[in-house]
Structures are given as structure tokens and as C-alpha cells.
Length: 363
Ligand SMILES: Cc1cc2nc3c(=O)[nH]c(=O)nc-3n(C[C@H](O)[C@H](O)[C@H](O)COP(=O)(O)O)c2cc1C
Ligand SMILES: C=C(O[C@@H]1CC(C(=O)O)=C[C@@H](OP(=O)(O)O)[C@H]1O)C(=O)O
Image (tube, rainbow, N blue to C red; front, side, top):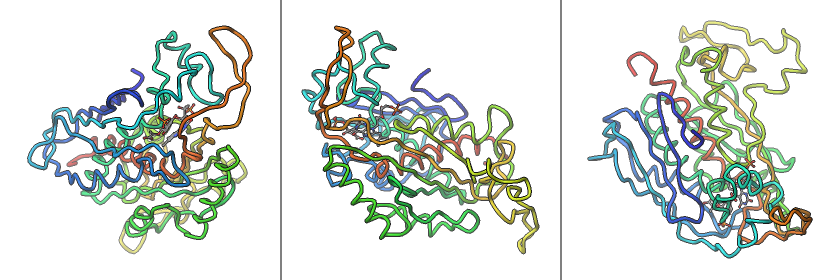
């Protein structure tokens, strides 16, 4: 099922960017969990369109309306459904896109898959807007995890070659995670963030776009959760991360750099620390061995491509007439999707971790 993730936690995202609403139904959320709605709204506001230099100008409040599964401040355990209204659609910008494919977007492949019946307005079901329901589900999962001491945080690690400092792969604390989360532009080093904003604005002025990398870390994940082969932590996280549009790469721990290392450089040696816990001296494994948490921080990096919809004329095809054409994309697009995708990455990791935590004894 394409827009359903069916696991210990199940959830379906539904809707189109220019339809009346988008939303999510979550199943198997544990009953009796206190959920602070203000914190859910804050989480979703980090992703919502910002109408600033780095964001689409579309105005959406992204206020979730909870339809079921929540009563007296707590989850009921029955399906948790949230609806998010679409209120600021400019559908005329998309009038030519059912026959002209935007290079880099899903218009062409979507038309093939759905035999031309897909809603192309605003990217329809393929839109980055569908990450709003993902963020709702991820915010709920995050609150349940934080009650068990597990914190997940992300920051912009790189935009078009401009780099932020990385999270400490061993000693990142919940305060460090919270600090970067609360920033308007989430980088660890603010001056680097300002350079990134300039780079995004430059691309926008050039009628172009840029991509980048988001780094995410999860701390206090209990050693032993996860499974081997097809149901490991990496598997679940990857499946949800690739549910975020524009993601093209994912690496855990030292990632692609492992290919340049020897075994003695890459292996993370074990020792017993002063609290009597088994830990590793380094964290190239990114907190996961054999699909199972080692107890060290789980770390990952996610590469995002530059926004496909750019205002420059580009070659494309009219696939109804099968002839070559030139397209100038209209609409209000993000010159870079990365800043708004930071909470989306956190949301995906939150859901994957909660999913595996449900297997944990005495959850
Ligand atoms: C938060 C977010 C915002 C996005 N905003 C835009 C946008 O304004 N314009 C656009 O063309 N693509 C945008 N995208 C990316 C497209 O939705 C995506 O590239 C497209 O659906 C094709 O999917 P793919 O890149 O995963 O193959 C956004 C993605 C995310 C995660
Ligand atoms: C609305 C959102 O982002 C949209 C994601 C998007 C795309 O193609 O992915 C295209 C744009 O849609 P529109 O042309 O309708 O403004 C963005 O604004 C959102 O994220 O909430």
C-alpha cells in the first residue's frame, strides 16, 4: 500500500496539496499516553511554509484538527486521525502541467502510474505538503519517546557545499538537541546558518534552487531494540526517510566514508564506562549493529536534491502530443526544501524508533 506504513505502528497519509485537506490516520498508538497539543503545533510550525527568503510564499497554518483517538488529553489507543486544511491554493499555476512534465518533479511518472488521472495541482499527492501529516505522526511519537528519555534532533548540516558543525556522535545531550530545535534556522553554528540563507537567496534570485544535507541524532535508545535482516532499525528508518519527497541519499554513522577506512580504523572498540555500561570509544557504526541498537547515539545524514520547480525555462515534453516543448514553471516554490525538511527527518526517525520500542519488554 503506497501511502500506508504497516508495522507495529501503522499510519496512512492521505490527501492532495490542492484538495480540501490532507491528513493522517495512526493505528496501534499505545493508549493512555499524555499528548501536549501545543507541542504538536510547535513541531508542525517548524515545517509549515514560512513566506521568507528560504521558503515558499504559500500561507498555511497547518493546524491539525484531531478527529479521533484522543480524549481528555490522552491517546485512546483507537485510530488517531488528524486533518490539516489546505487554504491557500493557486491552482491556476498548474493548468499546463497535466501535459507538460516538470523536470525533476513527479508529474510525468505520476501520470504514467495513475494513467493520467492524478491531481497535478501543487504536486498533488506527491507534494512536499504531505510531510505535514508525517510531522503530526512524528510529533506524537516524539512525545511518547521523550517520556522514556529518548530524544531525537536534527539540524541543517550542509546547503550547497556550506557546512555546519556536526553533532558530537558520542556526547550529544538533550539540551544540545533542544537548543538547535528551537532555532528559526536550525544550524549549530549561527554564522554558517546565515551563509546558507544567503546561498539559498542567491539561488532564488537566479531563478534556481539548491539542495543539502540534514543530520539527525537519537540519544538514549536502549541497547537491544531492533532486529536483523529485513526488520532492522536502519530498514525502518530508511523506509520512512525515503517517504519524504526530494530525499536522494541516506547514510548511518560514518556512512560512505567507511569505504575509505580499514577495519582497525572503522571498528568502534568496546569498554565498560564509569556507570557500568557497555559503550564504544568511537561511533562509526552510528548506534546500530546488525539492525539492533548498540545503546550509542543513532546518527544519520539525509541528502536532499535541489527543488525541482525552478522559474528558468527548461526543455521538457508535451506527453499528450508527444512533442518537445519549453516550460517555465509558475507557482510559489521553496528555493531549498532542506530548512523545512528538518522536522520531517526527526518525525520519520521518531516513528521508526517508537515502532521498535513497542517490542521492548515493559514499554
Ligand atoms: C518540505 C518540502 C517542501 C518541498 N517544496 C517543493 C516546492 O516548493 N517545489 C517543488 O517543486 N518541490 C518541492 N519539494 C520536493 C518535491 O515534492 C519532490 O521533489 C517531488 O515530489 C518528486 O519527488 P522525489 O524528488 O522524491 O523524486 C518539497 C519537498 C519537501 C520535503
Ligand atoms: C504547501 C507546501 O509546500 C508546497 C510543496 C510543493 C511541492 O511540489 O512539493 C510545491 C509548492 O506548492 P504550491 O505551488 O501549491 O505553493 C509548495 O508551496 C507545504 O509544504 O505545506
